[in-house]
Image 1 (tube, rainbow, N blue to C red):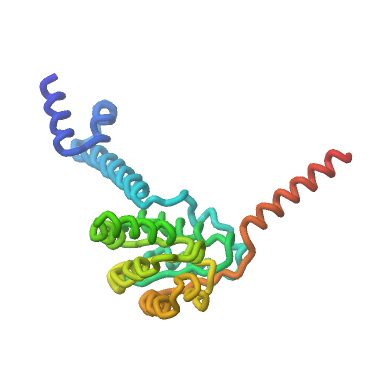
Image 2 (image 1 turned 45 degrees about the vertical axis):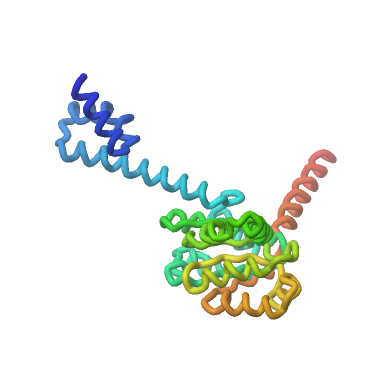
Length: 257
């Protein structure tokens, strides 16, 4: 009993959460199968490391504030032929993050831009990069509020510390205080990667930001080291409607039989 208490106290001090749950089971198996001490220890430590990795993954995913979780495997590339699947999978290696480069997804609403950036975010998290997701509207609104409450430095620092900052939905709605957006782009320039999505082509960004000169300054910094993915495919909602329409058509045919 004293030995068990000492072990559990040591587990607690070391921050091991999985080993206390499995140590007796593995000890019994080791005794029955005559497993060596080193093999027994190796199995325990391997499970603890796996559990720790899983906990860290969950924590990083939660801190990323993703709107949902969708993977690249769930994206239907056949429905969007303008997207090069090999190029997206190459981006999933996160080499662009290592080189502090940016990634911009342009395309009309509903073509899967946010799905792709969320999927890339999950790939980044799996590779132990820190990620933060926010819409362009919420980003500017957050900084406006921080300016009013004298907490600007803390908020800006929050948007700078992530290895990968994702800014979604540039273009709706238009920005009233675009200089705050410029500040984040400028501060992260050549220091940290950004992924952006927009339903507007670059030529329309002057209208989005209400200032052509400011839009040009933003684009200069954003596109200096960047990859742009233009999606000209069909909206995923149309795909869903087609499937639903096909289902309804089959249902009507069956009812007529």
